[in-house]
Image (cartoon, rainbow, N blue to C red; front, top):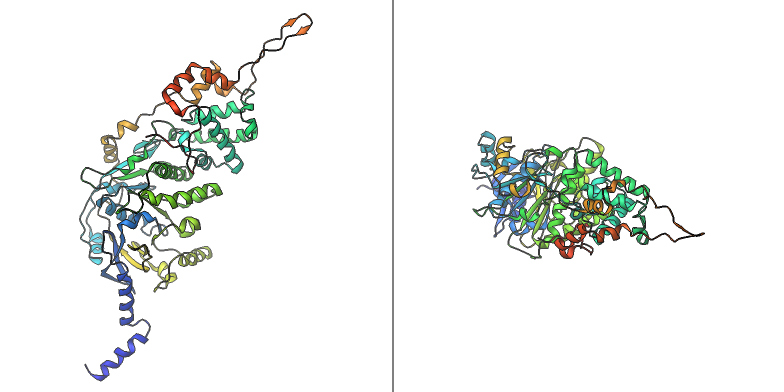
Length: 537
């Protein structure tokens, strides 16, 4: 090599953007993802617009229970990222839960279709792409739409989550908690909406008004708001979400016969216009898992990875108590082997206390068309560790299927920020045929267990039986009093009638139910941080 050729070589590191400097920084980033244990392959490193297929970007499998965030503007590829991660988790024996908002995740159960785009992407990132379908179960809230019905009882759903669904304010939420407390202590099981309506109506009747007097009471105005909210909720066709048989969230932890993790897909297109409902139901599933699972500490792989789509809907207009419960659940469920990925458009959609718990980040492109967009972009950049990239410029220039990634290493430390061209999912990128989906649902061993709704004896029936033929909805009118009898000139003292609670407890219906439910009757049900009941499996 001549002297004239050595001068540019020596000067190159001092010139910004020179090849040696770029190669060095790219190498440093790539070394942060050189894990020795099992990991998920996300894609290949991007540097200066060039894909470096030998520099693979990965997530260590044991770190998937440290939670994560998948964010990005509409149309940037978030759904395909979920599909990609879910496939690899399933392949490594980890069950996955996916909320299918738009109805295009059902394709994970069918092999993908090789085409020019898929082949080009696989070649770019050195992916050995093979069309593969994964074991899947399909669910639907209350049986509305395709899927095995997922229901919850009012008792197990709890007052805090129900207040969120009914959009109650803080005072109304507290009153609803009082109603649940009363129903728990008196053994009035709240299975469906008519049970709750019956108890609220009773507590505002002449006979029941005194029942809550010593613990704060229930105002007629608040009870009216709750009853109107329940009526409006039911009028929208929501009654089917509450009832029995109640879904056992342990079903989400199953593996297939070949050892792959089951992918549970909750089909939500039929309720996508009711975002508050499905986002709160997702939180109920997570809360139910939280207080059912034992502590496992740090494990070789998660028991379940739960993808919480449209996460901003969960946090919108949420009370402080609700947000505190979410934060506590997310913080503690990690030690039970469950990883939670929140999926939304920007990190600012997630409260700071929750965002701080999310160790793995996949950030797709953001738009910056308006001042608000610019503000959101700057806020997003500040949530990342120090980076060798100009993140403001990078995040607005990423293509579909590209993202900025940082995860937790095997030692629990954040990896360097890496612009990544993501791999292509190996399953079908789109929905499967409706007939095929229905056939899969009917063939499931869970179909016979959950398909048919059951309406057993609960609070409504017990209160009705105690009252006679008169239903709870008629309890607002005071009972007719018998005319006073006279003995001489002195009026006799009216005989004191038993209270409604005494009638319920003394009724044969109540005693029969008490025998069947054992210790659950006559004592308050133990509740979790969300107010959801702790069930016996």
